[in-house]
Image (cartoon, rainbow, N blue to C red; front, side, top):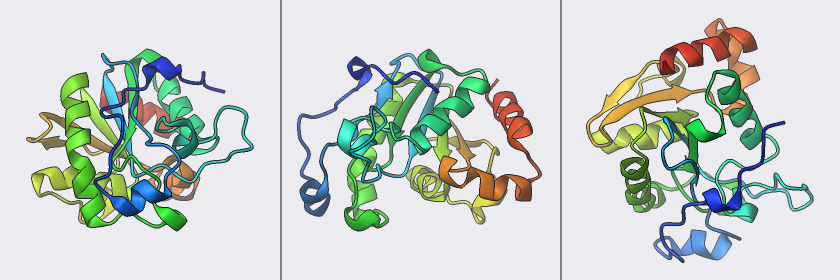
Length: 202
């Protein structure tokens, strides 16, 4: 199991945010980015899930206030990157939208647009070597900063794309929750996928 992030690694960009009234009313916490401010990679998810109040630590960003701290996706993506050679000090984790959308719906285009300035600020502050987007929705919203979009998400996995807006390469990854579903379709097993992630990021 990966080490749970220190709460001091949370980087809140504002004490409160009311840009999206429906999200502000539905959330428990704003799920801020967390990790090393000198990280080599920034990992971007779509949005925090509702969370699990019965979990010991890994309750999810909506309840912990820190992105990618769920028992499923949070632990899985941290394990994957550690196995690929990018441990705790090498990674910064955040979401395209910082608040849990009610009823687990997808964030709206307006909500994604409202939150993009926070994401840009995080990337500019950390200044990573790469931004890793996990899943179709996170990839689409990050590439939209440059008016770009993958025609087929699966074809874009592990294919770096330069972002002029962020000044860094964007590398799409499978969402950790659906990794097992799509790995074989892309010709990978767990071991070869981890190795491929490491090669792309070196």
